[in-house]
Length: 266
Image (cartoon, rainbow, N blue to C red; front, side, top):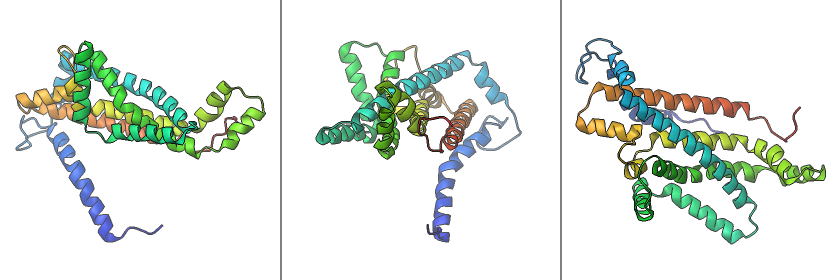
């Protein structure tokens, strides 16, 4: 593989600076005792303390985490089953149709998805709140999981399944001891991506959330409309740190599962 040229390195560096400079600028001023983002006075943790002292904000954090975990778990199960169904479909036209429908959900604007769910929930009489947010997050997370799982399923050799069946493995044994262990990296990738998307989502959640229930993204937007405070900086910094932590955990787990899995423990 050819090494990147100096121009490519400079361009890549500029891209990362543009992406991360505003985030680090925001986090930097979250430690400012001056209370503004115009000049840095002295270091303080009072804005972070204000975040943890706000019981309503803590409850919103709890709501956000619960929705993210539940939606990631449920969408991972549905996405894995959906990926298996797509791969083992004998009808190629139906397989292509399902893949196209899956991809359409990924590239569709969040505003369209959110507005569609709002119309649907209003029409069927679903009260906007925890249930509506959870269902919406599951819906836009499933296609992500399917895309993460499909490459591993397509990469897996049919000889592994044939060998397991020749040894007397049942359909359940083939799924749990051969297929699932082999596609485990894709499952982890899908789960963590679904978790991250749910934690960070604003557009869809903004449409389907109701009175008495909110998530961090919607709450930060509401706080920002009332006026910029460094508490928002501190809260955003915490969210960024958690997101980075999730990415690190994902890569750590992924590196442990890079060894080929055949369903037999050594």
